[in-house]
Image (cartoon, rainbow, N blue to C red; front, side):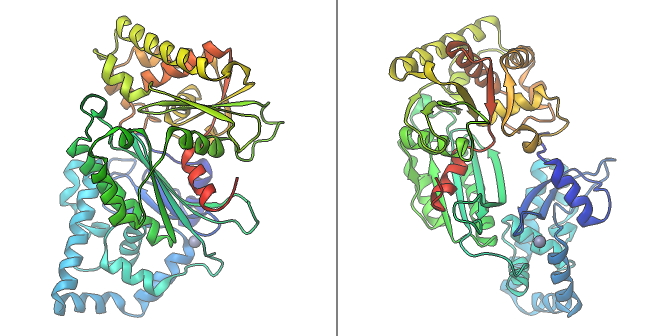
Length: 470
Ligand SMILES: [Zn+2]
């Protein structure tokens, strides 16, 4: 579940492959200009047949460049090197093993389908190795290919950057290439999100759980490798409330230093608010939405309310202790939630809203803009999308009636039923009810009968800042 794909990318990949794709996929990496470079395939095709090639190179220029290496006899030469160079052979085997483990996250019984591109030993297809390298895999053969074929496009521009937003619930990556025009929108090269729950239990114990730390660092490592494989010159990692509140947050900071080569930025609620506002409102015009703007960042550990009269520049913000993970952990005792559970969520939310309202004139805002997964997922459900398509969601309007209707539907479902919805990201199924309660009560409290839903948020704000935009 939770496959994310833009309709425009489906069309592009169909053109690149010269046929209808037979396996559900998502985009892992893009080239200069934004066309797909690497896709990630589901472990089974539409008919249920095993599909061992998880990462697939689709850009025709890249495919041709790698084919030239193959035509020059490099498959045989690299296999010979495996025979004579023990360290090279060990690294090759490690890549196959890691690839099989990676695929088995989606399909546990697929471990024995082989490694890179379904190969059990040795080197069969340089395209598969290069695709794995670009996705962030540790692949000595893929790295060799990269050295020989890059840059794929002569038009590739310098100054690529990456940002990682470490939240309470999720870890997210954005890699971009700067625009030719000053302050123009950068080209997205990779955008990814995985829910690892780094903040799980922090509210109760004050500590990051060792298991949560381990599974988050695995993703962090892969994201940093993917950013470097895509030629990012700088990687910035920012962490929000989960890390801020934990006494062992230093363990995560050590992993950041080792992998990103930069210091973890633990950003204050105020900075977080400013970056969310920048990401959410950059490029908005008064024709799109009337000012002042109120940006609602309904996160796992906290919810930020940010107000501003001009796009890109926050005037003031308030951070509250209401967050979807925090409230779910504290207050939801049953699956599906009972009337009492829902009433407890509503009460806690109202208290948070009282606090926010006492500190800022939120009632003056003319346009409400919601960022983060709760609002975008509710929009996807309201639209009855067959899969999560960010282009169908970004900067579209969600009505209060739809929020109410979707909340009503989600709160009668079990976590497993919600998780099985085709637009639900893995790991969001249990906390979205609390997130929806926060969104609905915010709309009710401040008199909004609609909300503008934004796919761009703090993560975009982080890269805009790196590129000197906004
Ligand atoms: Zn390309």
